[in-house]
Length: 341
Image 1 (cartoon, rainbow, N blue to C red):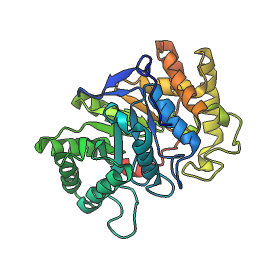
Image 2 (image 1 turned 45 degrees about the vertical axis):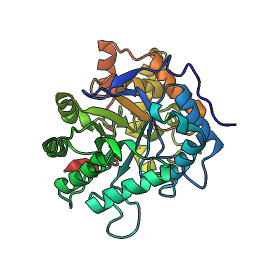
Image 3 (image 1 turned 90 degrees about the vertical axis):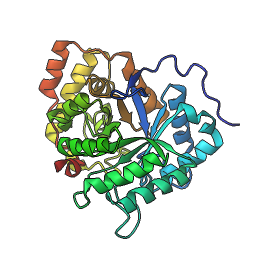
């Protein structure tokens, strides 16, 4: 039986305008970086997509190489679009990206026009889509002129393959350059997708100010530090987590210093009537530059737990002061090389 969306799906979710645009994004968006790849989507992953949409989450974020294996998250998502979600396409904001390694040879990654356009075409085919709502340059390429990457993004935009253009993990300096190049071509940079969390606060050093000044939206990925900002790591390294499975989040990042930080923050979360994850999401959304927090979920239970963060988004000045005293950078930003230029 084909999926039918909850008719009350828009009654609770809150939405924010993305920068100075007329497009609104949900405060919580769902990313398909992990848990949606493989040879066919798992039953639980499908349930996450349906529960997300039923909860008012309209934004689904992908990239060419999400899986594993590369491309499989988009392929699986495309099958679900064809079988269940396609009838709601005009209620959905779907994004993809190009820039990280995807296929063999010199054109399989980075920011050349060859790679970016080919990657976009491949992504659309995998997802059974005529267009994506947002297409990103996934990372800054130090060996390709930004004008060339902008050429590719402009081509994708003007051909109708993407309605909006974004960048991810660009420094404040390179963000300003890309904004200027695109503006000269009559295109406004729509959104930036940086990593940002209680223990990864690099964007506060200038990027958020630049985005606000120029009316560019900001969607924070890894707002839970790949799950580290959750109760499951308070007492060390449990089994069945992303770190224990030797994935992108290294056990080297779980230091005594970071473990103390999250335990201190957890005490503050309890005083708010939230768990650590919920306070972490609420805190990210308290930054006026942030349009949406982009989460991943392994189970429907995790998704519901994250959505509960929206029940308490207010912080007092004293609360913020105490959180800032504890929320120190944990040296966990594995995407820092892209934003170092």
